[in-house]
Image 1 (tube, rainbow, N blue to C red):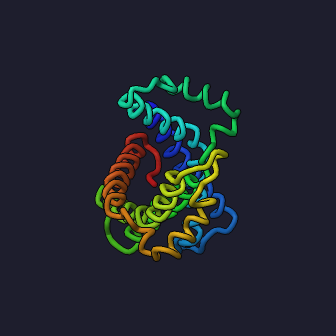
Image 2: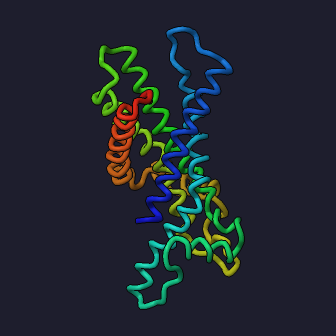
Length: 236
């Protein structure tokens, strides 16, 4: 739990701050016309960039989290623990391969995070702006709930293919040199999956992924918006 909390703290904090920073920079470079919305394609670019960058920052914590989660299985098999806590996992990972070892397997995770946040951040921002502009609803709980519900759906829609690819790449058998026996990389996995099983194979497991992402998105955004109000800051 402690490693999962650390990963989520880094990931969520960096993605929110990065999205707002990149968006504000783009607005400053090319201010939109009065009354017009921030272009959707620019919002999508901000979401993907912020999500990928946040996951890259959080990748060491993600790696340690996975290592600690595997300890439960090792204990059930009667094997001795490989790591004892967060710091021990960080130190042993560093000693095994230096700083590069902390980012082992980060590429597919960054790709997934970019797609998830392309859906989540972009959909929330765009939906909220549209509701405030085209309806009489105030910037309050109902708008936050509707926007986050849409965000959760698009996060699952864009993130499921990346989840399928990441899972297959990480769970494939490896040779003695650590090279995958089924897929060379995530792009190769994507190409083979679609070629052999069809496009629909990328959405295997969509429903459980959506049932996980939708409540998380609603909970996160409503909590975040209310926290901003309590702190006297501008809402999203």
